[in-house]
Length: 252
Image (cartoon, one colour):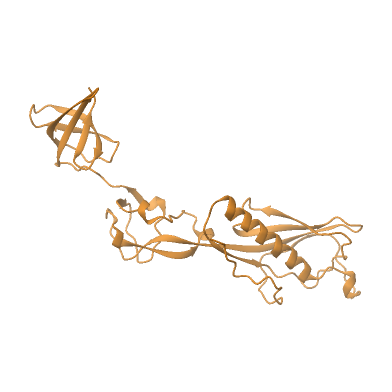
């Protein structure tokens, strides 16, 4: 699927609010001068825009991420006077390491009158993420009807997010959630496959032989966890590993 961008590749008028403070290392001319002797703000915005679109496309492709994006370059101070560059401008992502969220691009002229300017921008990456489709209580085990998918700017989701609904079905909520609340991984934990008091089947394996006997769970347990189980035939209490709902296994 081809990623879509909501930004037109034609340069917009300089009408956005100033996005951060512009860091400058170069030449500031205070006189009026001749327009074509200086680098126009539109040129800096265009160079930054094109560079970030390329970096975001590259990032999405390397991450195998199905998403759309939006790039907004911060307004350039119209009082800035940078000598016209007699070589092609170069760009580098100054921060952060990935082109997501608030970013800063270093635009540099390596011509006869070199200069460097730092241009702020905002990169928004939108993905379909899993949310609660209704208010849910802490401890609730999620079912298909409890969740939905909505588009969100994932750069703002500091606690993480989940894109595959099947990953959350059967998981237990560690806290209550609201309608349309994003289900971050920290909200979830594995639900117990066996609960205290459950009647379970105790399996014991040795080689190709499997022995099964009835038992009672004496504690809650998730798959892979060891719990105490009472053998209902011998009344002995043993440690067994939870395999799946209703089944535990002991070593022999």
